[in-house]
Image 1 (cartoon, rainbow, N blue to C red):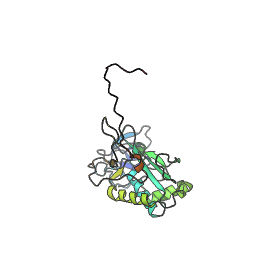
Image 2: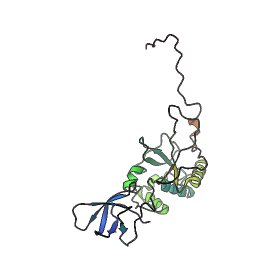
Image 3: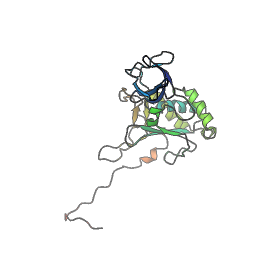
Image 4: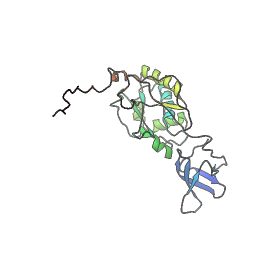
Length: 251
């Protein structure tokens, strides 16, 4: 399936050729401008029989796109690890709403909580739905190799910081890719049960990258190297002191 993004030339049986001006890959709706019309037309990719300029149908529901870029990013990181850029790490976590997942690539020291931020190395699935690119000058639907070249051209100094060995993290990441790709991604979010504290060393949460996929049922994913120190004791609030008088304490 070819990429569908703003700027894509399409063909509609009643309107002719037009250009997409806005796309939402989560809902399947696009806006497109045809000929010299002043207003854009809203079209549904599931029912309006929109085609690419060469006549290839756009079958949204039959071939749903990824609603988040994380699986593609995992493939990029694995390929760079194999090329010797092992000091490259992918952190992913959900927005407070839980509707979208953020991503952050960082390089250099493996410090997950105080990781360095570099412009263009992070983003959100919410932005990806409307414009399915990473922001490195890449195009929608770019292959893993094309994404690596785009990143290297976008920030060669930043990528150079990833050159080096981190064998235990590389092994962990390769195992996660083998278990999860292409349909699932990991989320480094420490979930807790309702009304309870953090579970002692829980499994890493796994999220499907597109609608319609069943929940992950494979082996549990362990936490990346460097996270073990977070579980040195039981993460629960201390029990309140017993009150025998029934009167509230002051101060």
